[in-house]
Length: 146
Length: 288
Image (tube, rainbow over all chains, first blue to last red; front, side, top):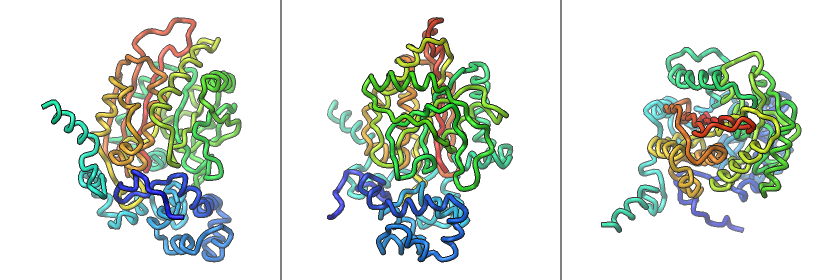
């Protein structure tokens, strides 16, 4: 069954971890959870594909994990607080992970954060229906008053 | 916030980058030292530590006698075990459930940086915490979290419960969680200072307006993880309608997020027999 459409699907660059993704991504997230234990981290590192067989993953999910395709993991039901444990297992800082998901180098990402972060302007909506978010409804109201 | 915890644990608080963040909490620590609460109710969210995807309670009240710091993959943070207040917690549970808030009761729970970092920022790094703690874990990881309105009303029910407790205690309530931030997906790094400022303004002046913000607005304007801000409304609901803003601090960035913090006090003095002489609150934005 195709994924039901939601208002938040219109937010660009965002995979909302909703109840449907939570169901779908249970295996990904439980795999990540297992990495909280040192013996599991070792077993995973020793043979990644073999270790993943312990979890009920679709081939696409297993591939995303093996390729460290973090956005794809999110799309297929992974949650960032869980997938961050995989990043930590690889010895990466969270900022490294965040940069990877945005397609920027860690240096560029860090510079963006120091400069105040990513602006919401131009990043609210895929369809352009919510160009200015809350301020839009305000300006509408003020327009009406006029 | 894990980054704030790591900076604390690794003695980096005097480095310029982190000093800017930590210095914003000096006044708050002084306020807390003066206030000397008996109990802190800490509204926070777990980050795949106590709760995985096996169980996702919307509101989970910590009723245990103690809460050890969780091992989040790097060993437990070097902070003291938190002592609970099982008697007050049980009283709150009984009261709010009869007020139609169907809490999950948790009698065994480890607490992660979502709780221990705000404790450090407000109490420093003592050998033992100076007050008892009742954790209230809110699901903001899986969508949908409870609505802002629901959170606000739960705060009111908690206030009622605390005030009906026979013992006269000084109780503070922390709302924690992010202000604007997104740490997942290609839009990661989003910060919306304008939104944050307006949220903090209304937290003091017009919280009812905040209770009407739909989830989509939080996620669109303040980031996918910015939806955590609904937790602040539990704290706000527990306070009087009219409050004094004692202190505010806001800075960008702390690692991947904005950090904001506000202390609100009830205007009227509590009657001597009532608990909750002064509810404070505060919040720490972020994740990182």
